[in-house]
Amino acid sequence: MDALAALGWQHVYSGKVRDLYEHADLPSLLLVVASDRVSAFDHVLEPGIPGKGALLTQLTRWWFARLPVPNHLAERADLPAEVADRAMLVKRLDMHPIECVVRGYLTGSGWAEYRESGTVCGIALPTGLSDGDRLPEPLYTPAFKAPMGEHDENITFERSVELVGVSVATALRDASLSIFATASEIALERGVVLADTKFEFGTDPATGALTLGDEVLTSDSSRYWDAELYAAGGPSRLDSFDKQIVRNWLAAHWDKVGEPPALPPEIVERTAARYRELIQRLCA
Image 1 (cartoon, rainbow, N blue to C red):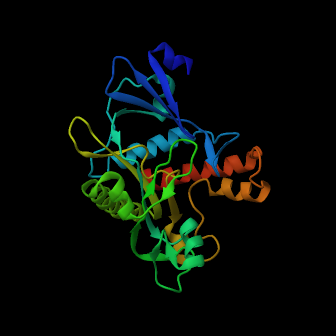
Image 2 (spheres, rainbow, N blue to C red):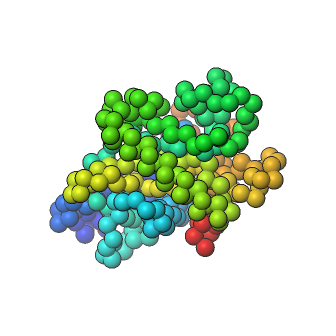
């Protein structure tokens, strides 16, 4: 981005949604800029979702302010004006290669596995569960963060111990389950069910503390449902406040061969509306 380069910010990395910048005068910090890009089935789609980057950033900041754990946010008033509504200045962390997934309800890929084998990520569950059922207790199902361009790999807790050591693996699990419990209560007070989410953690090199990084509890990293609709049952009880509308449309109009088609305007607007509604529900 030319405007950031003119201010001394050098681009160092782009993910599917976020771009990272560094500044020679701020060696311990990074600028994380959330774009309006939307991805599904490992492809970045066109067009983006208007306002999505700002909404994800707003929601991450909102959650950081409410979770009683260290996070990587470095509060400063001098964010570049060009990206201020969708950017965070953050501390560099020594990131752990574990994606910390917590599932409170049986749905998505977990439901697909359960139908095949009665398990979720290899963890046996009671028989007779249905899509969307609340689990007897939240499950911690870590994944190994694969190199860029490759798929993350679901792993056991024992495998995470091999990767990062028993003390770090245990701390990641315990922190993830604790944050999920706290966030679930906060969301439910606002009429929203937190079905599942993922966290990423690193170690703060300045303090040695386990620190929450990346985005947190956004509609890109989590699945949220309307609590009233969920309790009522029916076909709309699992309608989520995220890009599921995009996934559903793409699955019906693309065979996953070659480049995906452009999203129609009505799909873009319906998706944007779901992102906005979650912000209104939680942050009002």
